Structure formats: structure tokens, C-alpha cells
Picture (cartoon, rainbow, N blue to C red):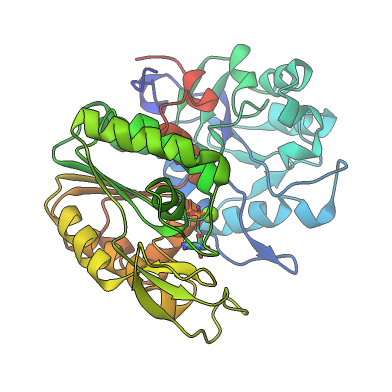
Amino acid sequence: MNYNKKSVEDVEVKGKRVLCRCDFNVPTKEGKITSDKRIVAALPTINYLREHGARVILCSHMGKPKNGFDPALSLRVVAQRLSELLGVEVKMSKDVAGEDSKRLAAELKDGDVMLLENTRFEKGETKNDPALSKALAELADLFVNDAFGSAHRAHSSTAGVADYLPAVCGYLIAKEVGIMGKALADPERPFVAILGGAKVSDKLNVINNLLEKVDTLIIGGGMAYTFLAAKGYSVGTSLLDNEKIDYCREMMQKAEKKGVKLLLPVDTVVAKSFPDPIDGPVEVRTVASDAIPADCMGLDIGEKTRELFAAAAKTAKTVVWNGPMGVFENPILAKGTIAVAQALADSEAVTIVGGGDSAAACEQLGFAERITHISTGGGASLEFLEGLELPGIACLQDK
Ligand code: ADP
Ligand code: MG
């Protein structure tokens, strides 16, 4: 896939109606936005468009509406917050690409901003229905995609609309693609990837692609146990993907053949059961990774492993990290994740963190400022690392 895509700076936007897909999928509680981070992240592109005389038509999805309009998932709250942040009125449409949207879009003057309703109120959105893509395209003269978090989905508002309009990226996508694209295509070496987390099956597929690129691959968190099982260790009641044991064995062979160093946990923090509540008290002990008792589950990497992983990360020039090393939501089980986050923060390397929980861990633990780039897309950054083509980026014009 070509990552060298045209951005808002490469096209004329003055006087044009620009449909800009953002990621306004913000968390809400009782009708109030609990974090406006994603709205703030969209401001550079919106400001650029306004300052250059575009007529801005914003759109996004929020949550998973099942049957059309749902007041709890209306983007009206986003329009309000955006109005405050921009200091201008952001007009809210009553529909996605219907009569109200058409009327408001036609009334826009240079520099004005409006927001369409939640794109998923239209059933066609997630089906990438050409009728919806066309209706969206008819509102505008240009499509700007700035929703990296949704770029792995081929939906009407993320990709389909580009069949009917010239399409370029905004600053958020440009940054994601610039940093991660460079890391994958032409990394400063040594290049170290660290994988963890709980979505074992999803992430095992990334390993195949990363083994083509990295010098060292580190596996921790919940996915490590399928590897330990592939080595013939018993992993007790730890997370395990039985169907992927052979795959892990193949990956270990591939690493050896390619001369890639593959690091697995040498010791493991175990408990008799998963903490309930997740941040509640839990009795733990540390065992060697080949001595996990049958009635125990591995919930974090042990101290020797923390040192091993941190040392590998520290010598790197490029580090990509996706997935916590343990159940970091519990302070007793957060030590492995802290050790890795600390190693990345202390490193001079280009450090890239992807994955919703890994990003949250960096922020909660106070390391976010010292990471080069924290990706705004969990699933999207993973598919990027997997080497898959992201429809929301592939549809944009090449430079
Ligand atoms: P990300 O969102 O960064 O991609 P995942 O969603 O795959 O990461 O995984 C994050 C979750 O993995 C966290 O909630 C964490 O508690 C859990 N986790 C990490 N290690 C383990 C483990 N050994 N056993 C069970 N869950 C784990
Ligand atoms: Mg997650």
C-alpha cells in the first residue's frame, strides 16, 4: 500500500464544500461527554479548512445504533462542544445526508462549519451502500478523511464516498501514516516490537508481518501463553488459544530462520483466579514460565522478564508497542506494563504505541508525554502493523 497520500494542504479548498470525516466517537455518560480528546484532536484539520475558506461539513459515527435515530447517540453534544472549542456556531443537521443536511450545506458560507448526524443512523453506512455514499458525496465538492480510528472499515463515510469525490487526508491521518508508515517501511534499527494484551487471536496474525520487519519481537500479556504452550509448557488456566498453538510454533521457527530475536516471558506472576472486581485484592506469586501450576493463571510478567524486556527496548532505535503486559487495571498486576512504558519513556528511540488499552495505560501511568506517537486507532493501528490495506486510506489520492 502507498502511504504517500495527498493532504488538505495539497488541494484548493477555498469556497469548496468539504465533507470531513472525523472520529467523534466520544465516550458519554448521562448525555454528557466524559472526554473530548477526540474532538480536540480533530481541531487542526477543521481550523486549517476554515482558515482557508472552506465550507466545512463534518461527519462521524458514534457508538453502535441498531435501528436508525437514537437520541442517546446523537452527535448534538459534539456540535455543542465543537462550537465552544471553535468559538463559532456549528450547525447540527437532523439527518445524515437527507433534506436537512442538503439545506444546511447549501446555506454554508466560506469558513462556516456544520455537523451531520451520526452516520450509523443510516443502515447503509456499515454496508458501504453506494446510495448513501452518493448522497454524502452530493453534499460536497471534496472529501477529507481524518478518522484514523475508523480507517480499517470500508463504510460509506470512511471509504465509499471517495468513489464519487476527490479525496485527501487531514492532519491526524497524515501523522499516523507518516510515523507508522515510516516505521514499517524504513525503520531506524534496531527495530523492536512489543506485543501483549488479551485479544490473542486478533493479534497473533500481526506477528507474521512483524517478523518480516523487526530485529526483536517481544511477546508478553495474555498472548504469551499460547507461545509458552507451543514450547510444550503447561500454562494452567491462563488465556490460551488452542487453535493457534501450531501457528505459534511456526512463528517461532520463522523467527529463528530470519534471525529475529523472539523474547517470551521467563517468569510469570500468577494467581488462583482473575481478580473480581478487576482492581480488587488478589493474592499473587511469581513462578518460572515453565512451572505455572495447573490451578493458576498468568496475569503479569515477572521481575526477570521485566528486566529482560526493558533492556531490549532500551537498545532500540524504533519501538512499536501494542497491548499491556498484564492486567494493568489492577495495581498489583501493573508492574510489567509500567516497566515497558517506563523503558519506552526513557528511550531515545522513536516510540509508537497502538491499541486502546495500551494508550490508556500510558496515559494513566503518566508516560504519554514521553512517547513519540500514541496512535488514535486501536483496530486500525493493528491492521496497519499487520500490513493490511486500510480502506479509508487506500481510497485517498496518491501524492
Ligand atoms: P489494546 O487495547 O492495547 O490493543 P487488548 O485490548 O488486546 O489491548 O488487551 C488489553 C487487556 O488485556 C487489558 O484489559 C488487560 O487487563 C488484559 N490482559 C493483559 N494481560 C493479560 C493476562 N495475562 N491475562 C488476562 N488478561 C490480560
Ligand atoms: Mg483493547
